[in-house]
Image (tube, rainbow, N blue to C red):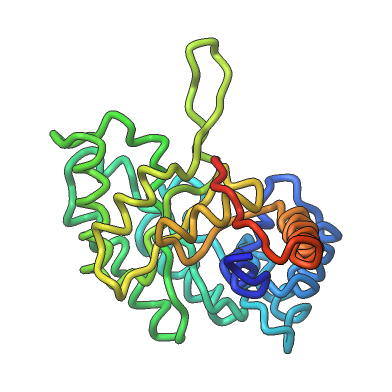
Length: 264
């Protein structure tokens, strides 16, 4: 296979963010993350201290969401939430931009908002991923088309000190024509666009809609270094199955095939 399990696992931020997550769900999720040796758990701020206890010595980072999921908290609230999360043991912060301000064209406000979180996190040695919520940006805003708007956000986040730009929260539900709510999350187009819109010092994270091993590999192929996921165990077992099949094929035929590209 083109990628080892270890390479792919260290792309995964195991997501523990569902509104109904119980204390037992948190503990089970942290143990699963340690078992599969992912990069981090991405959790709610109140759970950071317990997650840090559970994952101490495991090699799995603790990440906390800030202003989640809609980014509407006041800047000082986001900064203080970041401070508390870092004190409790978070070493990565996933913050949501204030999209209403961005769509209003108040770019100075948005940059100050992001910078306040980045500065606070960096004071504690933590890194920051900035969530755009691209499902809300399909029509652009502030006089810009969709791609232009995302490019401007990317450049603004880099100036403000972001370590990652991130496609989505996984909770950016948009009302559909039939009245239901749904979202796409990360798309190949947006990942490629965001990767091209920041320098090499800023990484790109996908979230929402990446549900299988092929999707994770596609994120890597498009230049993403992290991926929010809940299907961690299924991805691990699929990698194990394919690696075993490839090994068996090499034994029988002297060769093996590469993983095919998947979708979201």
